[in-house]
Image 1 (cartoon, rainbow, N blue to C red):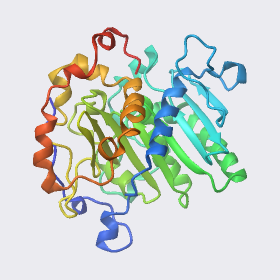
Image 2: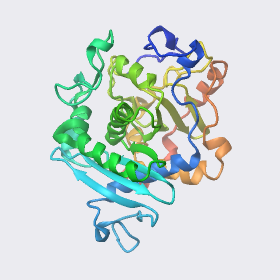
Image 3: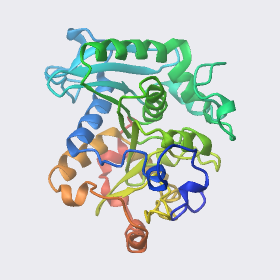
Length: 358
């Protein structure tokens, strides 16, 4: 099981240097909480991409397709769909109505993805032999999950996505740029968002991702959090086991954690908190919760439960089931008691018997 998480670390103790006042250095990452609408849109896209096999209009999921429980929105256009030999699937979509361009990764739905998931070695961030962040710029080596890095940058995938996004934003310069995904696709979306932030230094990039496993070491986390033009928000449903993986001490989470619990949603600043700002990190046993009942924790990972939470709970009672502010350090003790409750009853027997579609 994982070790106890920090209540609120002093971010300035290892933060890379950026210009501005001390407060600016600590609050440089976007702390503007994404709207519920944007969060719902990102989760919808992350669910929708599972049903995508091409951008041909005849292949898009529709209400007449018996095997699909999603329908392609009329306001959404599919620009491209990529499927690599290793099983990586990603689409570039855009909406004139909602004025965004989005890169959307699918998660674990094939055997090659399972192989990638076992490649937990850390490697330099970026294309092979051409790291995005030269080591000479930083004291500690910036390293990321070898499998995720290969999925994003192998076979020139990132280069192709970058060109497609550049072309779309050339014609629609005021559109926002989203990067999202579920499960392993969520970690791919984080790497892609950080890489895109380097390519578009003057453009804000929003990555609301779903059930992301840890994707890099502390130096990568520090680097990703230092970029003031990318905002990383990671949704975690109940005891979902995947965000607790890899269960290795040298892997860490970048970005903020949005914890979706039975009694309400909670928001943890940069996951580990910050003592200087008075923001709490995730509770001590956050990393261990999933191991109390791994079967149920695996069920919590299903994308449909994230969709249900946002549509049926957050949308109905946003004051309770959506986030509005970061949890403070003086609030954490009362919250931790709620976190110890038994979640086994949240899913019905029917859900327990279903095949995990992650």
